Image (cartoon, rainbow, N blue to C red; front, side):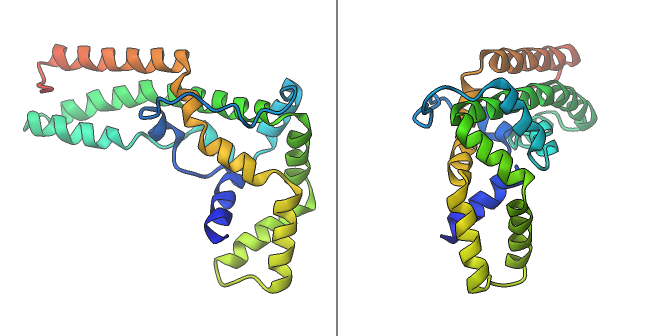
Amino acid sequence: MLAKRDRVWQIAFMRRNSLGALVLLALAPFSAAAVQGPPTPDILVEQLVATLPDIGGIGTPPDPPSAAREENRLEGLNPGREAEVSAVMLDWLNCVRPQITAATQRAVREVIRALGARKTILLLQFYRGPDFQRFLAFRSRLGTGALSPAEGADLQRIMAAYPLEEFTSQVEASNQIAARDQQFLAGIRQCSIDKQAALDRLGLRYR
């Protein structure tokens, strides 16, 4: 129960491992098993996106962890030219970041669209209503100790009343959406081509 609740905390606040760190690895097609009935209308999709807390976490996901490893690898191949390697990698990251941001936002919208109108409305009611404030209080309490029996019961009521766990699992799987996002893949590919051209232009070794 605790592990599941921790996952729900992360998604409720849109804080989790970077989608950008995962999209480069995920190749499996997104499962549409959660889609039940007509998709969520766009107006409700945009309302929920605008309502989600910490939306900056969606808009600016952390850099892929592979970036630091690649920079270290290139510096090892080019001793004394660390500044040039760092500049090339910074240009690459500046190219990749907006691609990750856009793909992340498209993926989150697709997750919401798959929920359907009824569940999206429930999530809107959660984030806009008093239960979210209770959720905030419970999260704060868990940082200092266990919840009281009454608080635990109220938390269970909240989790039963809203599709938070389903939203959690679908957002966690949203890297698979980005992995089949052709616009994202084309953008990332061009960033890699530009990085390679910069290394060649500077005469830097890359293998």
